[in-house]
Length: 312
Image 1 (cartoon, one colour):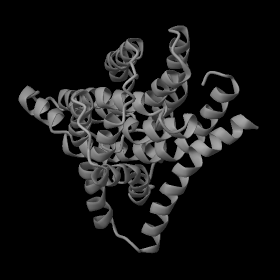
Image 2 (cartoon, rainbow, N blue to C red):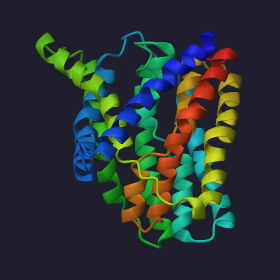
Image 3 (cartoon, rainbow, N blue to C red):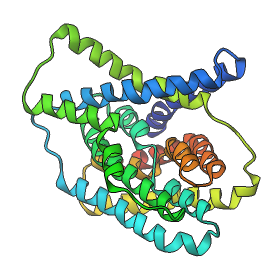
């Protein structure tokens, strides 16, 4: 019963936020243009507050386990390499190849890792998730540009890629928080409180926007790609990740953070990138929508099984 309640408490808030966004859009309270602008505000303003606050609030006694970093980045890079070798053999068109590769390796880690970790392990458990987000997101972004350019036959411009990574609002927020932490710069209480409150607004607002931008377009034609890619992404590969995490002797929080790197829905940002860089935009959007909806079930089942089995 305890495992069931942990799973419910971890997933239901996500469903409520997403459903509210979807509902108000359907009722006509907001339109697509408003949601698009709000999405920009969340990404450029609120997420930096969240990343800054999580770094700023790090416990001075916290030590990042190098094994988590090495295992996480190693698994990610290994997965990307394997996809480059396998996907072209089973997917025909280059626009679809780029989108399928991106959908499998690129999770909505930034949106799900921190709140899921807090839901399962409680307040104060999100430091590792925040640090891993700051490390993994640049890898996601660099590889996404490379994948999309490669399959459309374009030339990779390293300065542009580096600029996009270095000006990413999430990275800037995390780096600023780390500077404040390492230099022991303390904000006045009158500033620290609003920063913390803005950080707390980020996840509900981001999920609300996600719900309001879901489009259930015709997916029958791409059902084969969707089932194959998402089945591997959200079921098969997480099993391997958890097995390696347990074998490496990682603690429950570390195992769970690695799990969220690979088992969460496809990153919403993969859709506009595919649209603007020669990928199959329709397929990319379907990956985001279907994986988000399916994740409500898969994440619930995963959390229940992991808690019940004593893995987390």
